[in-house]
Amino acid sequence: MSGQGGALSGAEWLARAIASTGTGHVFFIDAVLRRTLIQLEQAGVKRELAHTEKGVVYMADGYARITGKPAFCFAQSVGAANMAAALQDAWLARVPIVALTGRKVPGMHHANSYQEVPHGPLFAPVTRMSADVATAADLPRLLRQAIRASTAGSPRPTHLDLFGLSAEVIETGQVAEPPVIDRALMAVPAHRPAPPAEDIERAAKALLAGRRVAIVAGDGAAQSGAGAELLAVAEALAAPIATSLGARGVIPTRHPLAVGVVGNYAAPPANRVVHGADLVLYVGCDTGDQVTHTWRIPAPETPIVQIDIDPQEPGRNFANCIGLSGDPKATLALLAAALGTPARDRAYAEQAAALMAEWRAAMAPHFASNAASIRPDRLCAEIERALPQDGILVADTGYSGIWTGTCIELNGPAELGGGQTYLRAAGSLGWAFPASLGAKLAAPDRKVVCFSGDGAFYYHLAELETARRRGIATVTVINNNSGFGQGWPNLVRQQGNLPGNPDEMLRFGPTNFARVAESFGVAGIQVTEPDQIGPALRRALAMDEPVVVDVVTDIDVRAPEPWLP
Image (cartoon, rainbow, N blue to C red):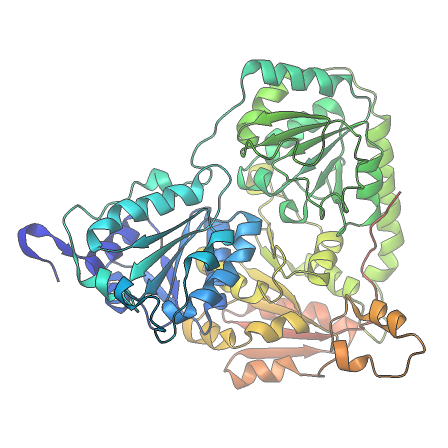
């Protein structure tokens, strides 16, 4: 309750401060911040109770990616290790999350206290800031700093460790200052810095000198909303555009200059195009092993121009680099002005478009396949047809990312006349289902389709109860091949003629997830024939409730393989 002289309890202050940010939901697992959660209801913020700390974080992750603002999630002290593990995906995908945990008071540290280990080392690798909150009076300063740090430059998670097993020390303390957070702190990007004019001129000169320029757009370009500027630069240079998996859909994927996802989750054309460039422009994209197929696409000696809001990124992996430190949208706008409307040879862009057309023609029979054992590419084609014009597609890692990133075309962002959004796991198996629940809470008027393998769905199927209880109407499509399909053929080859049973290592089930869903009170549809997929998806999307569509597929069908030189 409110204290003397207008002071608020820590619980009241925290609840009102979170409400003042404009966030509509917080994500938690009991038992932590109970007093705050009670106050949050009074402040109009909805409280989303999940079943695991990882589920909590992944829901917050999906919510933050769709709102473009930091999301808040809570766990008690014993759940801190699980919460830290889940933040790995948000760290890798550069998502702003503010995680709050309880922690026993210092007098109980180094004393074999029940259920507690040091939290600092757990959160250090997966947060930009991790700080103790020892008193309620410290809360305003540190919460604002945690929000500021989560959105500064390239977004990252942050963490506050609130004293008290369930944060009760902070909740019952007193805070004198007003419970207000400047909403400008919640924007992503919080600022749009631009490089100096001489850097822009140098980059423009190098780009104009290149005869075959390719562009690789990454998650940072998508976060910056740089689709229109990306196309302006690409059209000025007649440059094909490849993307990281996380930037899929930053421009319409059927645009004549679009060549798809590049790297080791790529269909063949993108790698061939980028490797054939004599200069590559990276926009809001790191140059890690996945997007470069372990630094082989493009060749290491290829000159690059790299735009990134994080000044540490340009030149990290390519020595011959002109770096532009700035927000991708703002920087591309300046670059487009500097490039003007040059006369360009379009042969390279036309070759890239021809490769895409050839590949799509080769895939067309698979997209229409009526094979008795359902092909995942046929499933992808049906999802593409069913996904609404403003739909959100959420994909898990591994084969789920490859299938959706290569086989489902997207109409691009709203500012380019589209409206579809693609979210993907940055590597954490099982992320997609709870993340899709967070995405739906962030966009209740949009349809959300989750694409998950059965191996991934097992991780968090308990959140079916959360979806039913909270009425979160997502459509979860399970590519159900009774095993870990991505690694299956390699394992069989490694087994060779050696005695033993490889099934024990990667095969499981079969499980009818439609029936599992029904046991949770969630609608379930199982599909065993190709011609059933489209009607099942349309039926599920028409229902205003959570639905699981279990599609029994062939584990031996391989996803598109990336090209290597």
